Structures are given as structure tokens and as C-alpha cells.
Image 1 (spheres, rainbow, N blue to C red):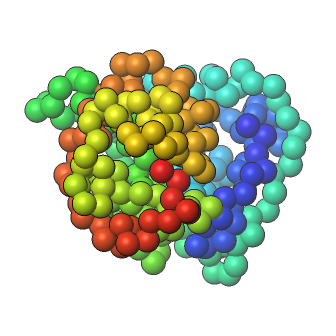
Image 2: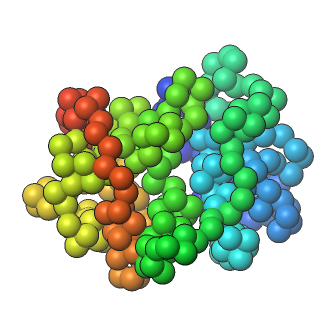
Length: 248
């Protein structure tokens, strides 16, 4: 959690920051309010804006209770004095003040609200997928300003993190995962294995090994329930460019 890993994006290379409880190099001096504001509004304690490569556009859906539980966990980790590395981002994308206007266009407000017409399992899956796991941050294409294209929610992106192709994970039969069962989805999130017995690669493999595989089966089932319910979106750009760069 001491930061330093770079993520290649179309706007440059962004380096993860130190989120250990070190009082100077990390977030050890943050209050609860500082943490919640950073996670939901993308604002640093000094009021400056965070770049949206930090997915606060999704984390803002988390409940305050879960946010504070997350802070408690991070503050329990060993403190590291590692200094944050400067992003390698060219002008004008390295400027933070314009992010105020970016947020006006692309940052919605408010936490997750349950859909009363759906089951508790579906709502749990929607919360996990959209808020904590922020699946759409990789699997949804972006516009020229880096905002997510809402009409292509989860339909895949050719320009995912580190240049990897993020596949269409809507249940479209031709370009997505329409042939997958809910059990297939749950099995993939738990093991990294696809229905054809191939395994996932790249960042998705890391996400499974370090994240999803540690979730309780009921949460994996909930995520599969939600993903299988998504409106199918045909994305021929993705299907015509599936190659070795694809992480699924």
C-alpha cells in the first residue's frame, strides 16, 4: 500500500500514492472527514483535486460506514515513509484546477441506493460491482475527456489500464458474455478460469488473486447475479479487436 506502481493511460502514466498511515508520506494525518471527502469527492485535505485515475467516481457510491471501515483497515497497516512519485503526464492533463470542471460534468453525487424492484442478492451485487470493485472503470469506454460513456456501461474498452483491452462483460451473445451462466461468472471471479478452461490474464488476474478470490461465496454469487442482469450491448469494436492484449 506504499504506492509507486505506474498505470499507463491515454493521458500519461499515473503512479499510485502511499496510503499507509505514515503521518507525512502517507495518510496518517487524515481525519475521517478527510478520508470520506477523498473517496467520494476526489479532494485532498488541502482542497486540491485528485486525478480520476483514482476511481472516486465509483467509490462515491460506498456507504459512509464501509468507507470508515476501509479507513480503519488502512490505518492498521505498517506505516511506510516512501515518498510519492510524480506522475508522468504531459500538459495540460497534468493540471489539477481544471478537474473542478471535469467533476461538474462527470462526477455524480450520492451513495448507492437500493432498487426496491430487485432482490437483496441483486442489490448486493450491484453495490459490490459498481462501488467497491468499480468494474465499470475498466470495462466501460471513455470519451475524449476521460469520462465514462454511460450508454456503453460495461460494454468493454480498447484502452483499459496499462493498454490492456477490457472485454465486453454485458450478456450480449455476439460480443459479450451472453453464453456464460451465472455459475460461470462466479467461478471466474473465484478462480480466474473461463468456461472454455482458459484463464484470465493481466490486471484482471491480479484483481482475482488479490481481491475477488477472497470474497465469501455469497458475495461472488451476488456479483454474478448483477452482471448477468445487465442490458446486453453489442460492441463490435471490442469483438473485432480481441487479441493477446485482452485480459479476459
